[in-house]
Structures are given as structure tokens and as C-alpha cells.
Image 1 (cartoon, chains in turn cyan, yellow):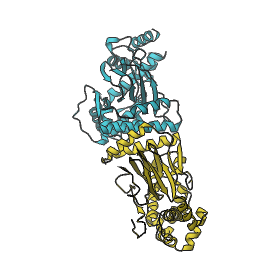
Image 2: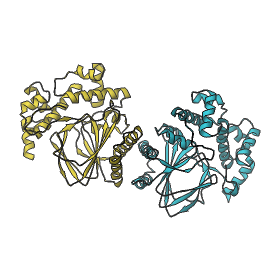
Image 3: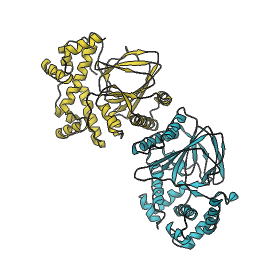
Image 4: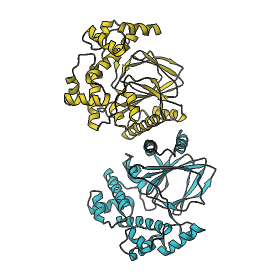
Length: 297
Length: 295
């Protein structure tokens, strides 16, 4: 999943989004985008970007595209991504929305489907008032009282709803995804429930039947829906999440590799090694060494 | 809507507006405001106004309320109101939100109570983004698909939430400030039905039993529901509504006082005098005189 051509500098980092699940569903930030400081990062939340006075070239595991100023950009941030190039002196306003919160928003199903499939979407045209809204949020970042949080959630929700209703541009489409899929609204809800369950439980031993039960459906339906919508099997997806988590622990802690394997829900060290190697093209120990070198450099 | 002959062709109009029974919870309108075109009217919706290139003076039961351009003005339109004058050539964008939809929004209690108590408020400072927002509503009002409707509801809800957190200016003080009470979904619908019933029928003699029946609930439950949302009994609410209308008719028409009393559902002139005196600390005749002197 990492960009192999630049190994050593592009070690994936886990962006820690501190959601307090009882109180906080959205985290806002307003920063100067800086390509040098930002390694590939990923987090199991929906990310929303808005650029003022600058344009940005993004790399999503090596695939590049341009995000222009004045356009809202929305994506499921579980896929490693980082800015490559910034043109202009400006700011980026970011919002990270907890997946469960995002799924509670009654957005059009085709939009939710597109985002969960891994499409990076953006608003079609600049809308008068967006710059003012982003500027207001940036002034209110310090206001973390529950009612201000709720206001920001509502405003984000309304803005994303408008984006979904007005229509969106696709900046990046996962290669495997086909556009001729059609399935009903229940399918999205069920897959969303499965994603939520996996996000909360991947670190423990979970079976296919647990995942199907979370979506209140049979194992066969669960498997075929998941594959249809996310282009991965449930098992592959759980392994992805575990490896993402293991990367964080390897890079940021001194925990033993065996402990990390078990903490991330792998049954044994050998299954961990095999999964890690096949997903990252590197061994856990090799990944850790690279991460240490890059952070001390 | 009831039609009666009056000298000044000013007739109250009960515009129902969106309610829970309708397909849509929100109506958007966009037009040039005009004092002549409108009789006094009332509708049990929350009204959000935005004026461009003109200012407006409202009469709320005889009280003048000046609404400045480029501000969001919000009130519960169940209180009789009329556009008295407009200065400048401009447009108004109105959003009408059904009472039940509004009560479902978890807005700060103080904010909700000021509106339910009859207050008229506006945002403290003008922002360019309000103009953009209301311009979009004006363009999109013809699109009544579910997706667009729920988008507008969300935009209005979030805009009102921001207004509530940033603070507001009071253009007209609330008559009463009801207590805080969050209602469940069924209670909201029952409450709305009763409010609608009183709004439609206040000019007839009404019993608490009829109001409860309109809400399809028991008399005892109806009484406690009213008390918890309004801090008023059903009887008091009926009287409140009658007095609001009586004030409007006294201030805005030449109708005789006894006619006003009967038109507003008071059983006798003396019942009208007692209620009016106790609520406004003034007699109907003095209220009318004060109003005409002012204009």
C-alpha cells in the first residue's frame, strides 16, 4: 500500500484523530499544507478538505490528482494519502468525521456508496459562501464545547448534503470499482454496519459470522454484499485494518513484534508475517527499522 | 380561512403552511414584499425572513417591529402579524418550517423558548454568506424532491443553531417564556395538531375536550403536554390566541369592540374586557386609542 518508489521517506503514519466517541464526532483543523512534513497517513474516518488560496496535488498510494482551491473534497481516509505539491500560499481546512457519525447522516445512498468504495469526490463548482464558512470554522477551532461541536457537525453535514445533491466530480476512482453496479439502499446500510463492526473489533478474534450478525444478515449475503460494494472480501478487509494498526504500533512503540501481532488480532506471529509481507512488501522488522530511520532523520 | 365584511378590507387569514401532515416540512418563498397585498395572517410555522434591498415594518398585534435588510429575522408566525410598510425596492426570502419539524431540532432551549413565547429576533451582525444562502433557497424553491427538501431543512437548522450560539437581537420581546421541555416524536405531532386546531377555531367557543380530541389524546394528557411545552394551560392558550387577534383587530381595523370580542370567540363583552384587562393591563378602548394616537 505504500509508495515503493520512495521507500524510506514515505513510511505510512497513522494520523491519530482523537475522537471521543461519546461526545465528539468531528475534529476540525486549519493549517498551512506542507508536503515535507507529512508522510503518508491514513485513519478510519471520513476526511473533508477545503483549500483557500492554494491548490494541492495529492498522492493516494502513488496515484496523483489535483485538488483545486475553493472545492470541498471528501474521501474515506483509510487509504494512505499525502500531499505532494502545494501551489500558492494558502491554508487547508480539514474536518475528520467519525465513520459512525457520517453513516448517521441521511445522505443520498449513491453518494455514500461512492465514498465507501474509496472514490475521492469534490464539489463540482465553487459556491459563494464556502470561503466564509471555512474561515468561520478556522476561527472557531478552539470552541470545543458540545454545542459548538454540534453546530460544526450540522454545518458540515448540510454542506456535504448539498455537495451530494448538487452532484460531484470524481477525482480518484479505485481501479477495481465498476460504475455499473446497482443495489438497493439496504445493502449500503448493511455494509456500513459491517464496516463499523470491523473498525471496532478487528483487534480481537472476529469471525465471518460475527460480522454478518452485526449487519443482521446471513454469512452468504454478507460476503457477497461486501465484495460487491468494497471490492474486497471481508477477510481481506479485516486483515487490511489489522496491518494498518500494526504499522502504527511498529513505528510508534517499542512493543515486541509478537505482542503487536496479537494486539492487532492476528492469531499467530506467522500469520502476521505473511499478511504484513503481502500487504506492504516488507517485513515487520524491516518496516520498523525504516520508520525509526525516517523519524530520526 | 374565514371571510367577514369589514370596513377596511383587512381580513385575518389563516394560512396553514407546512405541517407534519403535509408531504413537506418546509416551504420556501421569494417575492417582493408589499403592505397592500397582505391581510394580517398567522400560521403555526416558524418563519425565517431575509430582506434584500429593502427594509420592512411589521405589526405584531399592533406592535411595530422594524426589520432591517440583510438580517435573518425569525419568529413563530402563530402570532398574528402583517406587513405595515416597506421602504426600498427589494425582495424577501421566506422559509416556513412546520412546528413539529422545528420542535424536533435540538436547538438551545433559551432560543426555542423565546420564539415559542412570541419573541421576534434577528442575528446580531450581517454576514455575506446569509445572502448567498437565501439566494440559493430562492432559486431552488421549485425543487421539492425529498433530497433537496431535506437539504434545505438541514441548512435552516444549522443556520438557526449558529444564530442561537452566536446570540441574537430581540426585535419584539416574548410575551411569556415557556419552560424547557424536550418532547418525543409522538408528543410533538399531538401538540402540533392541538395548536393547529386552536389556530383554526379560536373564534368559536372551544372546550378543552375538543382540543384534546384534535390531538387524539386524553384531556389530562393534553393539559400536561401544554403545560410542559408552553407553561400555560389549554384554556390560557386559547385566551392568549384570542387576545393576540383582538389586539390586531383593534389596532388595524375600525371594527366595533363588541364585534371584535365576538369575532375572537369571547362569549360576552364582559368576558372579553376581563381577559383583555388582565393580560394587557389596559382596556380594549384605551389600547385602540393608544395605537391610533401613535400612527
